[in-house]
Image (tube, rainbow, N blue to C red; front, side):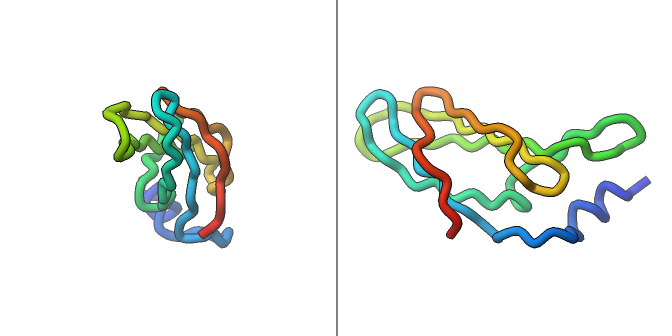
Length: 98
């Protein structure tokens, strides 16, 4: 029953503890470094029989130049590879390992 919890805390594939996503504000053009910690910030999505089918990460981003709030969404597979990424009110420029 708690196999999902066991999988969450014990991964067989090495993953950098964090990485950086460079985002650009659509309103003012400010470029912001956003640190992502997938294993700490992502939420599991469960399928049948309590199996984890993917992880979702939502992060709100606010720069210092304007009040435009951006919403970053990244989907991870069960082995922590990125399935998709998108941002509202901005643009994803680059993903860098930290």
